[in-house]
Length: 164
Image (cartoon, rainbow, N blue to C red):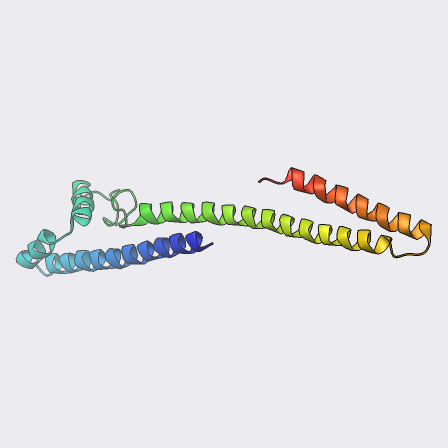
């Protein structure tokens, strides 16, 4: 479970960092649009020159669609086919690994629970085998010992079926 927790924390951290980066990118884009709207081309170019590579790629692809002339163009450069939030892929991989680890941990937990149950069964065998000799009636001794043998056989079969 510790590996699961570490992977899940990593995925969450990557998601948060990606969302923070996307927020900054969106703010930069909005400032660029505001500068263009105000007719301040120098300020607009200032923002455009400072776009990080992933935003620049999405912005250039969006401009190539001619959004101001083409009504079928994407509404902004942050649509999934143009822009990918940083860390999304890594977060998805970490989540997949975390899911794999939690499944593995649950399977191992089930197996250890079965081993523990067998320990309890063997303790019951010891109890009934020990008390069988203390009864005065032969019939009760045979029943108690037979029960101990039956539980022992059942526990051995369960042990054989478990992975090592």
